[in-house]
Image (cartoon, rainbow, N blue to C red; front, side, top):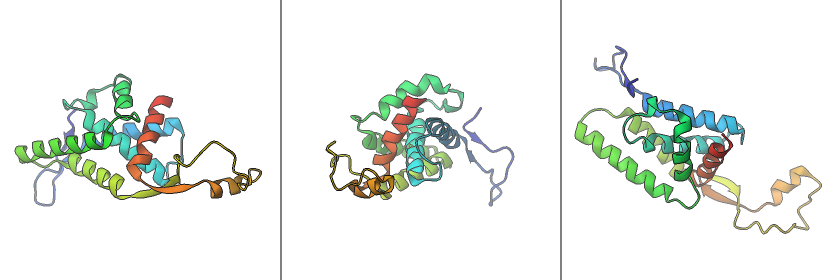
Length: 179
């Protein structure tokens, strides 16, 4: 299966329309991993952050253009190590995107997979989500937190605006572990 399929479709200029199969497949795998983990509703921004972070990891870790032939189970350890807490994931993504961009420019052809991957990365970098401040959580009960009321607990947890990738990456990592 080729990563890019034209299937005889014509673009607006009469050129063949290229379908970004590698990116779509990476998104599909990421979506399935997150749905299996059942960590959050699929309609939430947190879910999107996790899916985009995982899709980028899956797409960019495919160094030989074999994504469509890969069995997911054979790559789980690789994706797990790339999304681990102590890894420089953000720099790795930038380097891989730059490398893919240089390859696309050298080839002189369209790179619709790369366009979608760059859009996902842009969203992950530019979007901030309000999340619990894990650095502020001491483990000690807060006497004013109202632990009897489930609705009050969330209001008393310290929160901080976090880049979407910083929230999505650990969610993706956890989804892989739960798979």
